[in-house]
Amino acid sequence: MKIIADDKIPFLNGVFENICEINYLPGAQITNEVLKDADALITRTRTKCNQNSLQGSCVKMIASATIGFDHIDTKYCEDNDIKWTNAPGCNAESVKQYIASVFGMLVIEKGWILKGKKIAVVGVGNVGSRIAKLSEALGMHVYKVDPPRARAEKDEQFYELKEIVGDMDIVTFHTPLNKEGDDKTYHLCNDELLSMMKETTLVINSSRGEVIDGNALKKALAEEQMAAAVLDVWEKEPEIDKELMNKVWLATPHIAGYSLDGKANGTMMSVQAISREFNLGLDDWEPNNIPLPKKNAIDIDCTFLSDEQVLANTFVQTYAIKEDDIRLRMKTNEFEKQRGNYPIRREFKAFEVNLHKGNDEQISLLKSVGFENVTRT
Image (cartoon, rainbow, N blue to C red; front, side):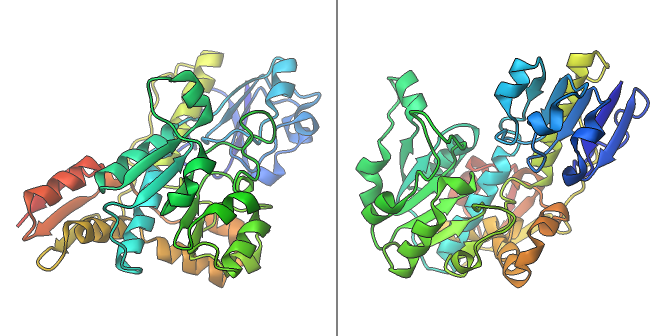
C-alpha cells in the first residue's frame, strides 16, 4: 500500500512507515502524476482533489486533516468510488481562542465593555457553538443564525441575519462555503448586508474568504458604514487584497484554527480514518508529546482590573493576535510561508493561570471558557 501525504501535516512522520510506503510532499507538488500509483492521500486545503488530480489514479481514499472540505470535489469522488473524510471540529477550540483574543483586544485596545453587547454568530456548528458559549460567558446577548439548523430544530431559537444585523455590535462568520443552493454562503456578507449595519459594528470572518464580498467590505470601511473588521480568511488566497488589508483592524493569514492542539486532532482523525479503511491497526492512534508553549504559566495582577479585563488579559497572553497581524502586514507576500511555518500555539487547557488578588467569580469565568488550571494568590 502507498500513501501520499502533505509534508506540513504535523505528528504524521513515523506513523505509517513500518506498515506501508508513505511519501511526503509539499501540497502544491501533489499532482496527478504523483498520485498515479497511490492508494490514499492525506492532505490539507491547499491541494485540490478533483478530476485533474485524481483521474486515472489508484486513489481509493482521501483524508483531509482539516475542518473544511471545499478543496475536495466530493461529487467526482463519489462518482468514482473514492471515499473521503475531513476532520470536523478538530480546530474548533483553536478558533474559539482566536475569537477570544479578538474580544480581549476589544477590551484592552478599544476600551469596549463586552457585557451587554449583541453578537450574531453566523453558522452554529462545531465552531460557532463554542463561540456562542464563549460570548454568553462574557455576558453578551447571543443571536444564533443557522438556516439548516433552524429548519431541523424547531425547539431551538435561531434568527434571520437580515432581520437582526442592524442591531448587532458584532457579527462573526463560522459557515462553510456554499456557492449555490438555499443555504448559499458565497458573498453572504455583501453590499446589502453591510449597508444594514450600525456605524459601530465589528465584522469578523474566520470561516472562508468568499463568505464576504471583499470589494463591498472595502467600500463599507472606506465610507465608515461600520466600525471595523477582523479578517483571517481572504478571497483569492494567498494573493490577498492589500488595499482591503490596510483598512481592516486585525489581519491574519488563515491561521485561526492553527493551534497545535487543533492540528494534532486533525492528524489523529485522518490517521484513524485511513487505518479503519485499510485495516492498518491504528484505529486508536493519538499523537503524544505535543510541545508546550514557551511560557505556559500566566500571572495576572487583578488588583485594579475588572472581571472582564482579567479575562481579556488572560486571553491575549495565550494567543497574541496582534503579533500575527504585524507579521502579515510586514510581509504580505509570505502569506503561505507564515502558515507553513506557524509558531507553536496551544489552547487554553495547556496553560496554568495564577490570579494575584483574584476572586471566585474570575476563577469561575476562566474555567467556564476552557481554562483547566486556575489558582489565585
